[in-house]
Image (cartoon, rainbow, N blue to C red; front, side, top):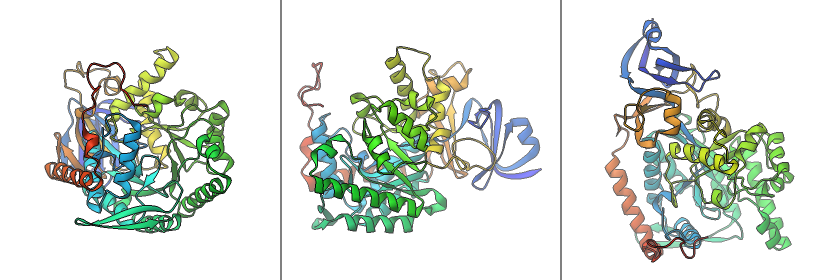
Length: 484
């Protein structure tokens, strides 16, 4: 009989392994950070003793969920601007270039990581900034603050860094207390920052922190609107960032793809199985074929504003053999990190498009946020399913709640009815980070207090407090003014 460090037993195992086994009374045995056995509870008990046992009766035992696209920083500016995109983008630019300190990025990282943890999201991609590709890569200290914050919570993070959209240089501010010092930051400095961050953090903390390279997506409006010299410079910078991702073996990602931009990226030689393109709305048939031919992966964000303005042809991509994962697009401006919400949104989004309730059965979408999410990140050998040899990233979902009862058809229950608040216990790398809905790795109240404090400091630095005002058309109107 083997000795396991931990056995989770008595629950319904939804394995997401190659045969998609569901074991009604199942168990998972863990040694250190790895799963060593999965099977019926009686069999696991006969094969292993354990230093500790977690009783998972009336719960589903699942692999941790994966968020394939989100933004660091957004957690402290969510809903700002009251739904107006122009105000929201202005808030992103000012907060991420001149309004944020290292403490801001640490506090936001912890807040977002705890939110993910509570919702059973054990792995997530986080771009170090947002808006129109406003990245905080003027200095390695900001990425370090993010990585340290996530590391203390204990979840996994793929931190995407890269240059801000040209033109350069761009003014960034560093804060020492109330003292502000401005620096003009060019592309070369941002690339040096990326190299430093990759060297320090890629594979850090037992490989729970990984770095990805990103570069701004070139879309029709950039290609048509930039003068030839500036367009050529944008292309040069894009190719340099892509070359760095290949040199260092890091994932390459781009945000905001839409019609024609995938074809343009392909013509530039950017695509491949290590490339993850976000949103990918309104793609042409040829672009769908390009993704299949190059084995490029897609992060579909069904709850994002981009999915209102256009449609990601996720079903067509899947039918073409493309790996498609789900993303939250971050905890802002109007959504959360609850991947159960995005699973359900995804199903209804595409069923409504086709006027067909048979589109995207629940299990297919569950794959998109587990094993396919792992594949999109190049981590399918490590996470995404409950199998011997894989990392022990496991969540327990409470099936004994009114909206989940009666306790039958559990795979349907967790996809069609569960929400993030049904997650009871979370294990990452074999370490119990949350149990009985109580976060164990950090003091949750302190995380929330730090986030509040750093948000208020950012507002003071930028003078953006007016963006917190209640819009006059919040109540009593069928259409908000100025929202686009």
